[in-house]
Image (cartoon, rainbow, N blue to C red; front, side, top):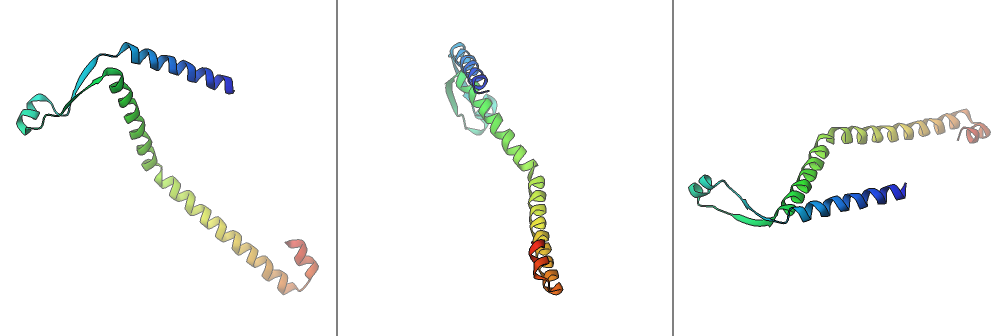
Length: 115
């Protein structure tokens, strides 16, 4: 299994390097469209190699997806936490009832066997 993982990572590295080498030309990224930039007076532009833009978009998409899923699954995590607390509370109550039953019966041997 380890070799399959290494082979996959090597193939992924080859693909990423190939994409980077094929997209070395500079592109200009503008914060706003030209008409809106003229209207607002804000014209921020940056020139980057195309592969940086591609990889940045992939990373940004992954981060947005991770945050979206984390927020979407909040109700499941809170329900699981609530069930865990309830289970622990019930386990403590069962142990308490077992010790009370053993004390009420008075037979120490049976109390030891129940524990």
